[in-house]
Length: 464
Ligand code: AMP
Ligand code: ZN
Image 1 (cartoon, rainbow, N blue to C red):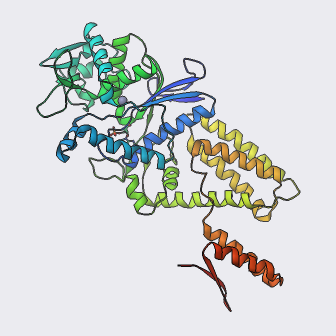
Image 2 (spheres, rainbow, N blue to C red):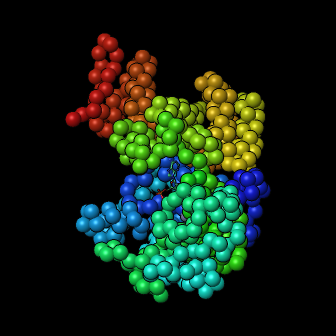
Image 3 (cartoon, rainbow, N blue to C red):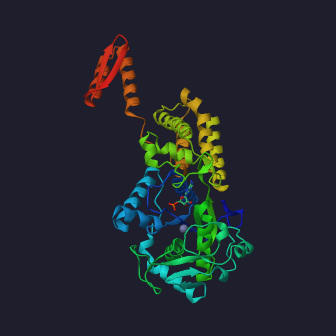
């Protein structure tokens, strides 16, 4: 399977270092608020990647960090008058709930920054001992002039760095032209949580967190590292500098970056105020699987413009898919095998694998499912599918769903079931099979459904 490596700017055939086992690190959320669905697009990309790797037979060890100490979490917990831990725990739970709603499969581990301070201190000490870090007034900085490879991932050149002059940056996020020495450890400020260190009390910078926790749980060299494109610089550039300068080993073999979810051409973000949370959308009546489908309509390396009309279209596509799966379930198979449908399913299976192998082409994968539906639907309506056809289609849908995750669903609503029984009862009455008709009436009554017969036909209502 080929994946596009941001470091080499090429699609590369993927093989993990240890045969059969993939060590994968995904930058996770800062747990200071509800994630917006742009964030969820990036986590969903990680989910689909892990599902695909499992489908290809790999054991996947995915680690996703939870940033539970930074400027935002500290400021908000102080504003609310609760401890940092109380505050971040609440949003961590909301984050897990959202993942679950979106059918994003759990990572192998979710390390919290505050629970790995010793590992971060150890890494900073290694950097200091090797001459890559220095202390100023209780803070520790990474000396980027000591790491000539700095800028390889993001393409920030040595000249650009020289132009930006010298200086030290305490802020975790900064512009490309400010590629200056970045902070590893921040000296404690009045009223903020802090931890002891060889350089005095303080707290870790954001970048060191990922270098330390990935090393702790996955080792010095990772097979894959994922995140949104906005993390490429400075975050991932700094992770490489920290990890490789400390261990002397390659940090990541394959860098994958997911593109942004946009609104009217702008990145969906908290700061622009143009965001939707999953909960907002669910409250407005949108279905989580329609949102999942919508977020998967673009390739992960392409931007996707988010609109509510898009979610409506996805809802329609999903409804058709679910209806197809339900009717397939209820079909009385015919005796004759349908070759055309069989061949269409076989072709879809091939196209499905080819799409996955081509840098995780999920829109292509979804396309194979709808292609099967297009060919099989007319035959399904006519009842022209035999048991083998049904089994083949179901098996394909199951494999497709192991990646897409939006096909499985609760059986169609009770209403369709009731309508079906009413139809059967009408037929029974026409056939003067009153015993069967009464049986159905009683069966529905037992479920609290009352039938009312009139000249216009039979209506039903729920007993109150
Ligand atoms: P944060 O919680 O802000 O650290 O972000 C969590 C993840 O969401 C990171 O991997 C970001 O790159 C990603 N992200 C932020 N905004 C967007 C967006 N509009 N579209 C896609 N991913 C995003
Ligand atoms: Zn990270």
